[in-house]
Length: 114
Length: 111
Image 1 (cartoon, one colour):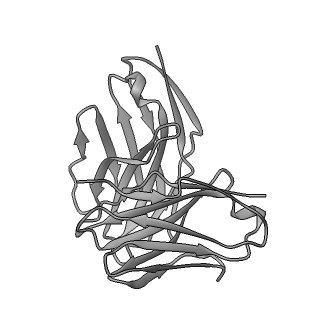
Image 2 (cartoon, helix red, strand yellow):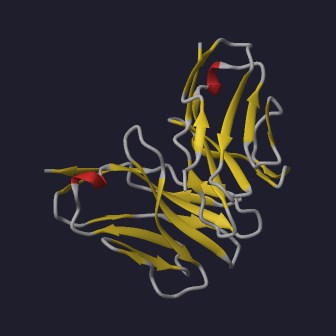
């Protein structure tokens, strides 16, 4: 079974600043996907960014980028130029390509201050 | 395209009752997965259906069951409800890629 660990329960960041969320995972698989999902208060979960394990290049989506360190089993998310709308719970998730199940971390609550 | 829809959005039930939740995936998506979200346990995988067949099941008791219809709509049933079943139940649909698209969830409260 895969375990996903997010060690930061809460993070606060000033608007326009940068914040980095950490995530580590444990797996014996070699092929898998990693995701960051965002769940705003009382709103539905949306996909922020995806990383295929076989790709060495770190994924980037506009202001969101990841630092994927496969050997260290680390997958951090950087939010640049933080905006008030980035306030949400962020979940790191692991998907085994054999069963398509998502294993989630406990989540990190990000609050962007005006 | 319309997103994933879930009905009802809110539900209050009494211990011992049973409940059925519904999920309509994005048009063309054949896979539907269900997750339970609670403050204590976080997000946990319940099961996945693909083309009307259960393909995977998480570590939940047999009181939790599901099914998928030919139009890919899925239902989840929980029998003999317990207080601990109070949660946000999320469904997610997927087409051929690995990206899952989540619905807004059904908030179930068991009293």
